[in-house]
Length: 102
Image (tube, rainbow, N blue to C red; front, side, top):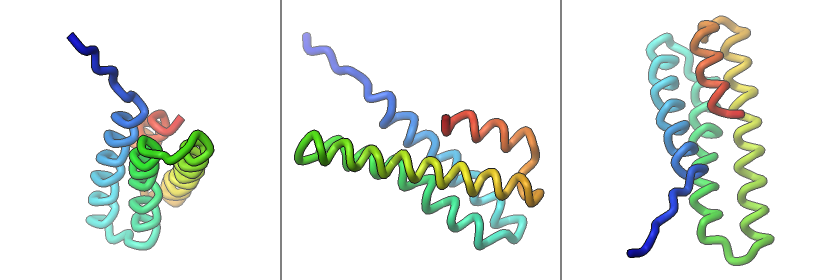
C-alpha cells in the first residue's frame, strides 16, 4: 500500500483563500470595493503560489515561489489590519482571520 502524505500548506492556503472570498463578499455587501479587491487578490494569490511551487523547476525556483507566497501573506495581513482599523471588520472577525495567516 502506498502512503499518500498530505500537503498541509497547500490545504491551509486553499482554505484561507476560501475564507478571503467569503470575507470579500461581505465587504462588497457593505459597499467596500477598493480594499476588498486588494484583499481578494493577495489572499488568493498565496495558495496559487504554493501550487506553483509544487511543480518548481528547481530548489531555487521552489524557494522563490514560496517566498513570494510569504510576501502575499504579509500583504494580506496589511489589508486585513487596514480594514479592521477603518471599522470595516469587527474585532472578532479580524482576530479570527489573522490567526490563519501566521
